[in-house]
Image 1 (cartoon, one colour):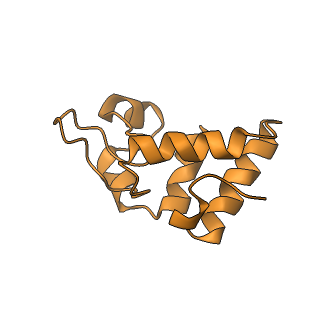
Image 2 (tube, rainbow, N blue to C red):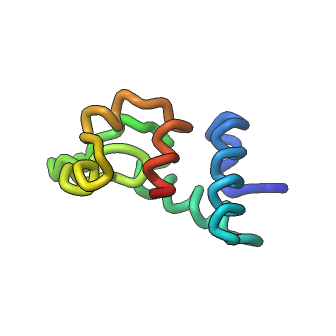
Length: 93
């Protein structure tokens, strides 16, 4: 299966995105849609520690705001220390 932006990440990242989509019963274009969102939010880096350049405090694959991270039981600092594949657990939440 060809997935948008798949060449930018490790196979384990793609597998985790596919697992997430399957868990939500999302099929067809959903993996590419998620990958495209992450590409946009991370400035095409797919980096879990990328910070928002405007200074909002947002961090990571989908630019978690500090308050959102807190609602998820973590912090942007902790999210930034994660491997990208680990951070997908919070993307899924």
